[in-house]
Image (cartoon, rainbow, N blue to C red; front, side, top):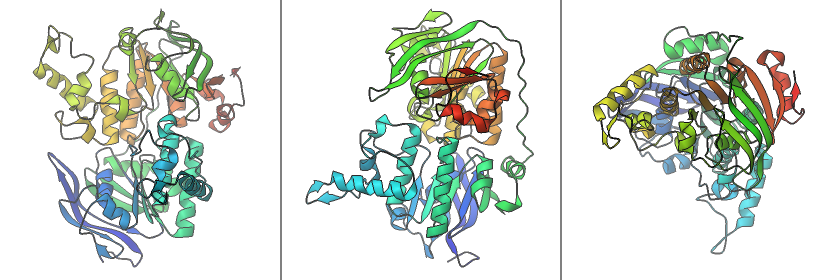
Length: 514
């Protein structure tokens, strides 16, 4: 087997992957060791996920060789990879929404009693996994009814159940709270230490690389440009290697004065979740023009339902919502948007883009019937649409096979850029944003943050939900904490340390002003 060390478990040799119009991997050679945490970093479109998809059998390389446990890989399919002991948790979950947690975890290896599905045995299997790894889930919950963070846990537990000793995690913490991230890292350290497993993490969060990995590989434009012992580098060095130049997140000024006109008002709002349980409980808030209000909370405490209610995607039980002073009760999402609202949704794949439509159609949607892009709202001006799409493609540094490529073919971060480009291009007085930089690289994160601040400084009222506390502290003028659908505190970012705000995130306060 190729590899300079006896404990090499995976080896790539001169691997290239060519897609139409894109060389995703370019002559990559890399050895990964047994019993290590290996981090793979790079900008969106750098080829990280493509390389790992090859290892997991999603694609066969155009050229080069892959070796696993001393044997050259001759056939590429996920089934073959699983048989070799390789598991992968993808950015976009591959779960059956209508199935329970237990059914998803044991899928394709279901326990049976005779010819019948043994539900009790499936439940016991999951309970054992939960006890062993400390990732709490309820085996009987339907996946469609649980939070994104809990769905991620199901994916991870499913991989453990299949017995992988090489585990690939593609942006595993993108949907996790800091506490959940700590729990996951504890699991990773435990399995690496006790079971000599190999864990490969694809991530954009450089502080996580420093916290969890033994070694780190840096990719840029399809090539592997460096492999370093983590203890020998820092975040600044890694960021510079990723983009080919020094990158520092620039300071974001927050002018004190702004228009005190209320652009978004929520009064005593009550909303139910998909299970019919109360998710938002008598919540009230206001967002003024020219300010960013950040919502801080552990995922699954009503943030998603609140945003869906404001944007018209979920019915309200009681209370009122006003956009630009107009009551939105009974209005469709389209009519609410027409009041002057743009929305970057939490789940870019489900509600942010049309995966099978091209990038042009995705960035123009909502404007396609305007005189700029159509004649009488019927005949599309494809030339004008393409010129507009190309402008946004370049402005937001979307990386892919061009504006004619399907949005679903993009990496997660580039898909996010498509959503941000479309919504930010609307000149609206209200902007609702959920997880704006989930899964994007450090350069794109800084760019999106700058775009958000430009909107704010042009008197846009912005309601921001993020699982990233650093992001909320960096961008917000005010912060409100939410727990079980109720607001528990209101702060300015400098008035409370991040280490103390968790008290309010877990219900320790009730509308206490600081």
